[in-house]
Length: 216
Ligand SMILES: Cc1cc2nc3c(=O)[nH]c(=O)nc-3n(C[C@H](O)[C@H](O)[C@H](O)COP(=O)(O)O)c2cc1C
Image (cartoon, rainbow, N blue to C red; front, side, top):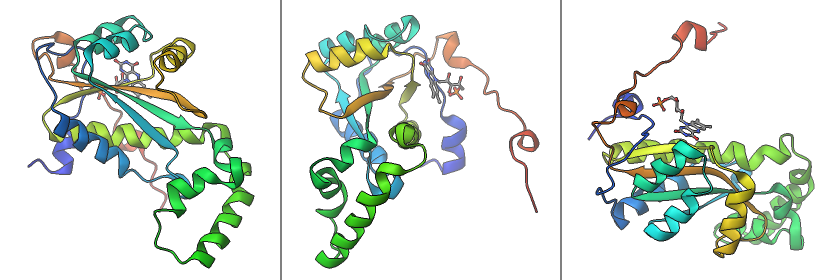
């Protein structure tokens, strides 16, 4: 198995897939689990995913992505839509979603849960980056999923190139969008078309000295 450094180097954005390649349900579960293990602000898990392997549905959703992404998704085996949950949704119904995401599954004792929940209900609606918080969280999820896909020898594409309104309407029409959720990323998965020049791009990164300023 590849170590983390190798996976970091190997992972690249796939621009075209082999349409005959098939990602198995087991692999989709493994990739989903990698996302599920992502850290989250306050542990509130403000991200959910829709894992679409049904070709007809995937291709319908692809139509709401910008040109090159649309064709790319159609060639892929599956499309994950990464959904962010708005911060405000967490304070509805006396923090019902906080219960579902954090407190119900926790083994913490009841008094401690209540104390922490009261604290969260107090500070959470007022956090910095409140309106971007789901997006910040979602970015970590796609990073984890992309590395997992690489480990499984699959290609992936992290995408924000979609028409937000069109995708939102399409998801609603398909009955896939629960209240308080919005699409933040598309994430295509499949077997890369290794002949496609766009998949042989050089990995361009600034040098470590430009990227990181070490203050010692
Ligand atoms: C926030 C974000 C949005 C992106 N959106 C798209 C996209 O819509 N379509 C696409 O083909 N690639 C997209 N990418 C991939 C970048 O183009 C790619 O990561 C970058 O060019 C570096 O190439 P590499 O991933 O192969 O190292 C996105 C990446 C990120 C992090």
